[in-house]
Length: 568
Image 1: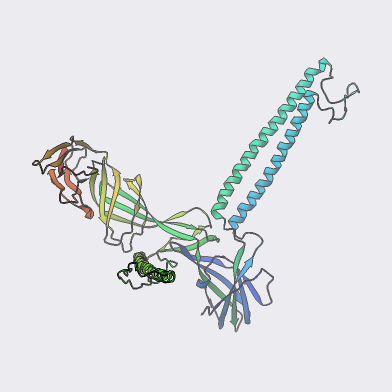
Image 2: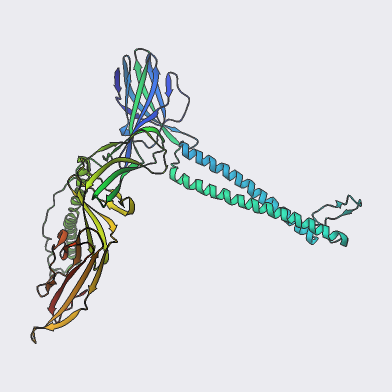
């Protein structure tokens, strides 16, 4: 078995024409696709029979928007063969080349033809109705020929005004039935017209999802030399935009066992202009188009702005003043250059942060092989595939911030122990199999904490009872201070059959000036400055089954009488 690899690629343009002598035309089939977060790598396979000597192999119907520089060609076969250059040609078509898009356009055209037929039928019915009205009013003499009466042999002008009285009832019955028939046909036609319009609107919406309006394709022309007649299997690999995948998570908490079942799914979509039919799909966290180089860093030099000399009393002549003005403009321009350099310098620092995020993704890249083979047409709906499922032992506890929201939430805390990171993605939350809400999961590396909230706990109720504010003035005549005193009381009742730990959160005031004094009252917080946020505190309590738990706390704020503190 001999393997061949591409030696070079030439990019040219070619109008679709008849095959030249010695050319071997063949079709290729998509066998495998690796989907990245913003693109895809496609592997096509074609099997051909080579003749002895030089062969020009033509592989057509390649997508127009493939990355030309990423195209790689290799081959395997028996005997001695050599693969020369590869030309990537452009073929122009009269119609769109995407099959699904073409089928929708043909269906829309068919429906529009039917719609025009119905419009014509409605127009004919309207003309018939106008004719019946003229007959009833006796105004059709100028447009209608003499109508014979087959019973008497006489002719009349089509008007009913000259009919004998005994014929009027029969005439009106005829008009009534004719009018009813025309109106019924009109209603049926208008109803059909609405049905056609709905179908056309639906197809137009589908067309927006799949349409690429592509009327060009790529054709690869390979030059292969073989010493004997043999069979060659070619493999074409290229990158293409328009495909992506994103992780989607389902987290289900079992409140009895404290276990979280975390399912990782992949949501795949593609609008590449080519359909994937029964292909092997691999999902990768790499980002081939995200860039591979570090940002270019320039020196950041600090300097003082140059002093501008004061206006001189010696500036008497106009020419000297103009010269001085030009000099000052030059100095200002230099100053602007210094300032611009100082402002522009931090920009690479922001890029460095972004690059660091990409490096993390690269260092912890992973690939997931989707089981079996899948089919996914270009522009079709997003599809989900299960990737992994992992169980976590979690610490289940309760939490609430009763001054802002009296509800008690059920929290579960654990650590991610998987070999690969959990990429950022949407997360659906379930509690004992019941859906409770959605959230967004930030990327988690192995060993990082995973904190999830699984909705409200209906078995725990909190009564938040604030006391009225107490305001007074303390101090001597020239050192009086305003004092604001506040007290809060909490009553927490648990209806659970077992004890649960609860964290009660609040934000207490923090002084930013030495003349402002804050003193905490009542039960002291268990934790202060949570997550490095000043004033964010919590009290840790254990709720006993079927019992009430009390909490009292508050604070005083004192400050000079002649000052005002907003939002206090």
